[in-house]
Image (cartoon, rainbow, N blue to C red; front, side, top):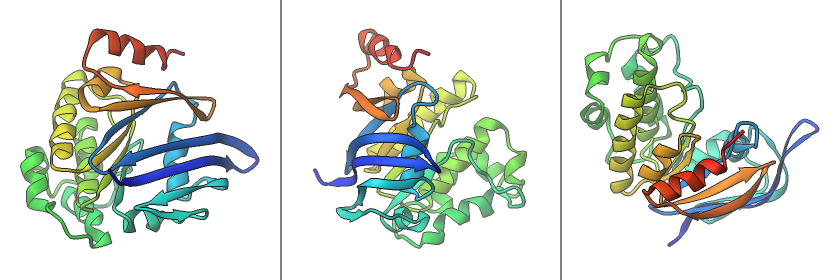
Length: 234
């Protein structure tokens, strides 16, 4: 397999604060990878480093085989990487459909269109002209996922997509994530809900203190769930 994303020995900072310590990971085309760990270990900083929002002082980020030591937010999108950010970041003064269309601004060709997103999330079509921020939390997460898909990405970074959501919505998202992956889109799932991880991911990387400290295959079993949960205990 070819790596869509390859992080090589990253040392990333916010100001003087050293957050990522010699972190390396990769996601191959079509893979489903989970990045797990308790709050504060640097999982979101991994995303922010890829987007150029954290300062990369050592190491490199390779996108579709092209290596960078200085990144800007647009670079990820140009290389087919879309992000579903923590907190969803729905644009307040835009409708549901207008928020979706933002995702297509990168101009990549592919199977995802507004029509296809509405097939995936019928509730979004019902509320197409509603302000995006007027939706429920679960519906906003569907909108955030739909907006990312509109970029027709090769890889989606999902940063805590089930945070604050009811179990029934988490179950719906698990089905959607698997459907998206089955169509060939790679996933990097940053998540603390291990029941979702075992249903979606093929392998995991566990973080502590800004570094990957364990990794392995994911199996949908009680033993694997217990093992994963041990990595996110506070």
